[in-house]
Image 1 (spheres, rainbow, N blue to C red):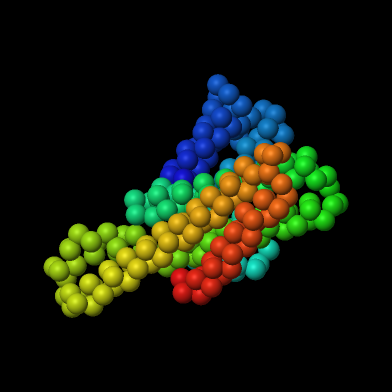
Image 2 (tube, rainbow, N blue to C red):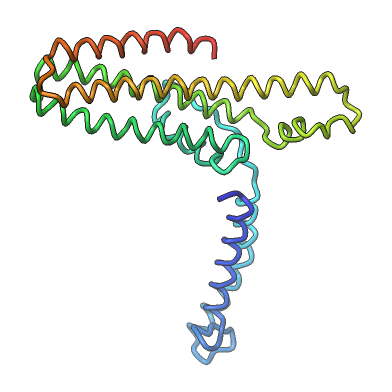
Length: 246
């Protein structure tokens, strides 16, 4: 829900509460009530209502400052997901935000299912359990880092300005066109980077899916599963290398 939708909903709820409190057909608070406690309550509610109304609207209208997420900070994944939710309805970034959030949800589900498969096959506390769970944890960490990087890139992306640059309306203002065209290219590079991260995350999910398939097949030996795990480790190593450039 965007800021103005929240503002409308909050003010509608505030107005409804006031009607319920002071309407004669409902609670019917009034300072002229014969009941001294009811009269005092109506005065108190009335005195609090005005500053509460002003404060509520100030808070709702206040612009949020961009909060970049550090990859190694506590709850980095949750904070990134919160940012993705904010951008999910955008015309330009919406699709990327929804895809990234869906990837994170799939990985979380895969991690849960994979642990069940490992426990069924090797039990808990075994070296094999630890070995394969380390692989899936590293895959989850890599995907989370990608999600955080996407969220941070969205914070520096002004959709309104980008749409203006794409519509060529910028040619009608006094700012040199060449500068604005360069700015549009920067936006497009940012979009390209975000889509590339989505692609890398999808490769991780694909390899994890393959590992889960082999883990679920009792005909595959531990050595066979080791081969797929090694492929995931190699892919994760490549992602760490390439992440330096995006």
